Structure formats: structure tokens, C-alpha cells
Length: 288
Image: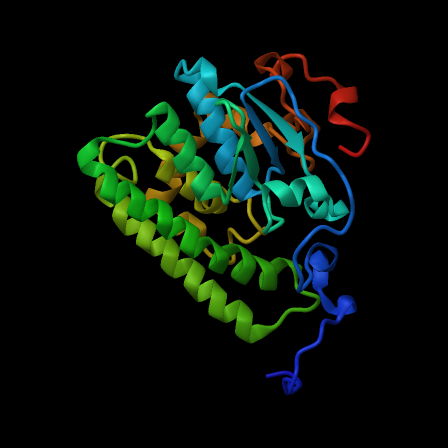
């Protein structure tokens, strides 16, 4: 145990002690500046970044289009959370919680805002009656979808933060959240031992939601922690993750609003299906 810490009687915000994401977190809500959001030509306007929560929605849009739902065309606008775009007045009108992704559904007579990734997945899947699974499997699908929404904070804000982003390594929180991350992987591995998909015989939004977090962890793409968590030992999760990763729509979804890694895998904004084919360095941007 390192030096002990005694919590103060009343907590106060220390801006200098926030770690890697100090500039993106604050204890108050609301906008910090005036900035309108752009609006494109398609029925759906997505404001996001290719974090796991953002990728979920990107993948669903691309899967809907691949399945022939032409009405699912969308514009994807980049929200740079490191620059505080999520605190602009336009963004907070769409999502008062200032988190990506946020969606404006303009397919009807009155624009509708939808925020929280799970809510966006469910909204779109119900609108197009797609990727919901068989009616008899709906309770199972919803259970796994909300399992992911409840579990991911332990993986991202818990394990990921303390293992990869905290100002200094701390044994207790790393051990605590590594244990929980491995427990969740074991939950998935046991469940996938005798089934192809998370709910019934169909690929659903539950698979997309869980894959964006735990699938990418199993594929060695999250927090540089594959060896530390021994993710290869969760063979059923790895097999399921690889199968989803191979889907063309998933490959496209991973690219949308991505600003890091291989420049060939980045498409900062998506306004048409042809953007994937005509991607150029000037589209990617100088900070690729």
C-alpha cells in the first residue's frame, strides 16, 4: 500500500489531478461555449467519435445499410472530445450529458434527439425492425444489451482508466478492476460456449454493443492489456469477436469518426458510402 489518502470533509475539484482525461471531465454540466452543430443531407445526423461507445452505433448504421435499409443513410460528424467539442452549445442540446455518441433523427416531421449508445441502438433497430432477433428471444437480447451498458463502466472507466490512463499505477484499483474485467470475460466465455450469438440464433444489437467493448479487448485492441488479462484464454469470446470483426459492415463502422491508429483505417467524417472508397489524405487530415 502506498501513502494513505484521507478524503477531505468536502470534496473540491482539482483540475491538475485528472490524469490523461483531465480536460474532458468536470463536475458540472452544461455548455462551455457557443458552437452550432453541422447538419447534412441524410435522415440521421450522428455526432460522435470512434470510442467503443461510438463504434457501436457506427456498426449498426453500416449493418442496416448493408442489409438494404436505404432509409438508414446518415451523416457522421466528428466530435473531438479532447478539444471539448462535447461541451459546445449545439452538442449539449442533443445530449445534455455531454457524452458521445449523440443522434438527431430527422426522418420524421419533427427532429428527435437520442443519446446514450444503447438507446440509439434500440431506437434504430426498432425503427427498421432489424437486428432485434426473434420475438421469443427479445428478453434475452435486451438482457445482454443492458448487461453491456451496466458492465462497460467497470471495463472502461474502471480497469482501462487505472491500468492505462491514471497519473500513476495504483495496485488496489488495478487489481479490483482487473478482477472484474476477467469475471465479465468469463461470463461471456461461458455463455458463448454453446451458442453462436449472444441471443438466440441471430446476430443482434446485443452482439454489436458487447463486441465494441469486450470483442476489441479480446482482439488485443484495448488498453494494451491482452497479455495482462490473458484474453487469449477466453477462447469462445475470441472466436465470437473474430467472426464479428470479419463482417464488412463492421470494418466500415470501425473507420467512421476514427482519429487514431492506422491512417488507412480513419474516416473522420462519413457522408456517403463512397467516402470509404474515395478516402484521401486530405480527408483524413494532417493529424492522422
